[in-house]
Picture: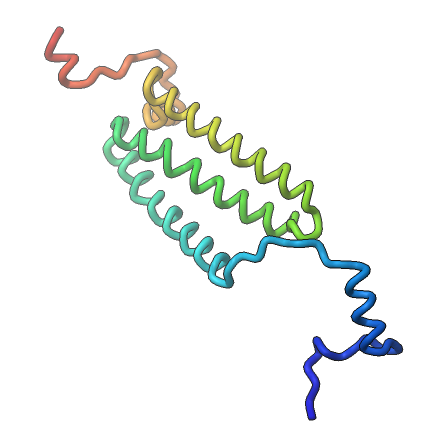
Amino acid sequence: MFSSPISRAPAGLSPTTSNSIRQTHPTPSIEHKSKMHGSDHWTYERYFSILTIPILGSAIAFGPVWGLDYALGVIVPIHVHMGFDTMIQDYVPARKYAFANSVLSWTLTVTTGLVAYSLYTFNTVDVGVTAFVQRLWTGDSTRKLRISEQDADLK
């Protein structure tokens, strides 16, 4: 009685002609993700956004603390990576722009890794993210090394 839109041939073509067209022009194979992928991705983005708020608040309240520096060095690159990844998937979809999507995704992944490594190096070798932001905010340009309480007791 009712035919599904999939089984109907386009106007002016018989069902056999439609099948032969489908066979001569196959659709490109696209990785099909589960229907929950977008929902899970959105949920993880919200978790990282919400997780960033108390870490930033603690950094403002307590000042330079090495644990907060390392937390920011992990959370911020992941949060930014997920945001840019969503932008790439929305505006440069793989089904239309496969090569550009692949190049942008790999560029984003490599850049995120470099940023995470740079933040780790900045936190271990230099003053750290929170102390640097505090210096920018106050305008204090003197270089003070961060000394832990154990190192201060040794002197």
